[in-house]
Image 1 (tube, rainbow, N blue to C red):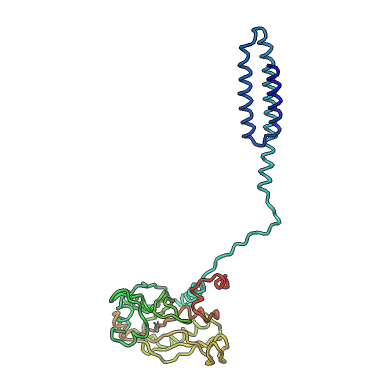
Image 2 (cartoon, rainbow, N blue to C red):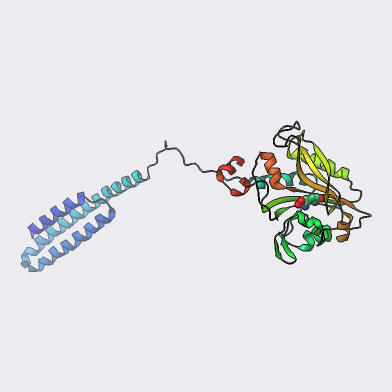
Length: 337
Ligand code: DAH
């Protein structure tokens, strides 16, 4: 018996030294307890008079070992904490991880700037649908079915009378049908045309403007455009109106801005002319007003429409419209704001 106890004692003491975790220590304790139980179960084979003395020895052994287990519980806890701290150690001299902040897409930037400029002049935003009827996109805009101006835009048809809008001008009709003058709206949105090269994309963005009230003249349009040019480009940017043709305006004009690259002297960007065409505009055609139930003898108005991509390309010196749609991060990063 004594020998068994001594052997168990030596074994446990040896093993205690190598315990690394609370769990290992617990398992050793379970092992010790069952070994002790077995030793104690040998008591019944002893002579009656030997039992108390043996009981005393076993008890002392048990108490002694329990104290040892407690002492090691503290040691193991320290070992575990040290390991944990080592694993969680932070190298404060290590350079931080770089997170790149997202930025608005240049088209969104320009669109927001345009809205800001016109909102400052009292324009309210109206957004029409991207899928339009033939009526709103063409007929009501004084472009009936057999009108040659329909060929000016290659249209994506969805059904016989249903199409992807080719111009935000369709929004003019929707507003005038619902609202009576005075009207002052800005209609931004995506438009679609079957057209694809370095300066054209099948989907692009336009910004339409419409003002209808009593006594509106071409001078109001010109004054507003001059203000727009200054705020969107530079304070010295000039505006020039050239006669043009759109079915929904009469007279119609094409609007040029003095070249922002050369200041009007003539360069590659403006092809030596000093001017860059940026938008179409005009006085709202009487027919269009009539189509919307607005009396053209009482009210007049002007309208304008511009390509957002075109403005972005001019403003940021981008020469291929595709750069705006490829979403190459190296390109977009330059507009970080
Ligand atoms: N809708 C024309 C286009 O897409 C642009 C335009 C020209 C809009 C004259 C207008 C305007 O409102 O008056 O080419």
